[in-house]
Image 1 (cartoon, one colour):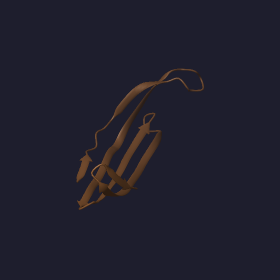
Image 2 (cartoon, helix red, strand yellow; image 1 turned 180 degrees about the vertical axis):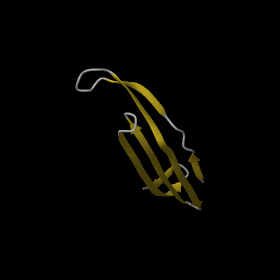
Image 3 (spheres, helix red, strand yellow; image 1 turned 90 degrees about the horizontal axis):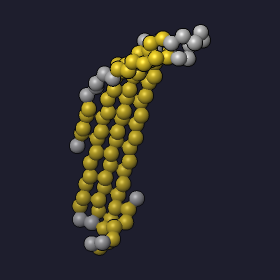
Length: 93
């Protein structure tokens, strides 16, 4: 099964008080890309079961009116298997 979430721009407006002359200036940050892909599945036959999942999260954030950028590309996955010994006992990894 596949589940995708489309990109949606996120905009943040605030105040930056970290300038050297201690004057407050407006800051703006926004995303140019922000999305998640997910793929997962399971398979069962008899007493055996296999599950798996893969995720990817990607985000591109521009900070301080485009003077700085932050990129995130996070990926994760797992595969597990199990064997059912009886109705109330299943072992796996």
